Every structure is written in C-alpha cells, then in structure tokens.
Image 1 (cartoon, rainbow, N blue to C red):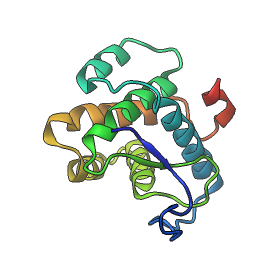
Image 2 (cartoon, rainbow, N blue to C red; image 1 turned 90 degrees about the vertical axis):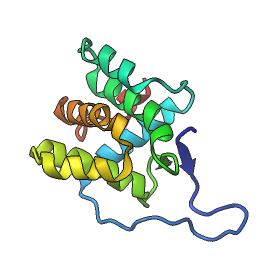
Image 3 (cartoon, one colour; image 1 turned 60 degrees about the horizontal axis):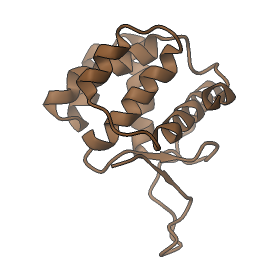
Image 4 (cartoon, one colour; image 1 turned 30 degrees about the vertical axis):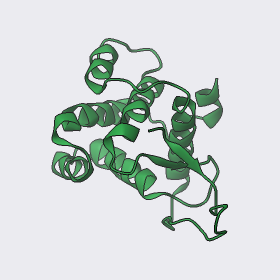
Length: 155
C-alpha cells in the first residue's frame, strides 16, 4: 500500500475528510511540509524491506535526513493498519498519521525513549518496532529538518 495524498474533501461525498486541527508553530509547519514532500517522492518507489533499509542507511552519511525519511515512508504504508495518510504540502489540516510522525520526532529529539517506545508500540507490529525506532531516531538526530527548505527535498 502506498502513502496517499488526500484532498480536502472526498469526491464521492463532498464531505470534509477526517483530520486534526492542530495549532502548529512555524518550524513545525516547515518540518511537516518537508515530511509531506519526502512522502510524496516515495509514492513512486517500490516498498522496501525495513531491516535491509536500516542496514544500508547505517553506512551512509550523505543526505541523511532524506535517506532516513525515504526508508521510513517506503516501509510505513505496509506497517500501519490503514496505510500512511499524508496530505499535500501546504495543506492547513494535519492527518492523524502526520501528527503521530511529528510527535515521534519530537519525543526522539527530547530523548524521551519511554514515550517514543509507547507511540511506536501502539501502531507498529512487534517485528518492525526496533527498525522504525532506529529510523525515527536517526531522522531526528540529523541536521534539523525544520530549517531545511522544501525545495531541497524536491531536487
């Protein structure tokens, strides 16, 4: 299953989609936009084995943030029960999956491993939890993606 970019309303019903109205700080908005663009780029890639992706990434250092995000977005659609829902870059609404990812990054940056373990454990199957935690921690530890321009992700 691929990550889905979702429109503001469903074409069938015209009803608004289910989303969260979260007040986001400017740096969090930039981070969310960066994650959305990275997720959109990964929609055209084939899914990857999570263990193999982590092994390869532990050796690379160049463009680390994008590499970790790509590995994460290529694996998550198959690991989350309903797939991965990402909204289009610039969308004011935040999906539950996006809010979850932002909270994972926040807890990893804060060094709160108990909360990080809990958040991952509630949605990810036991066999993949360690790899997802690795990718989240490495993505959070890379140069702060909040300050990176979205255009760099599109290059």
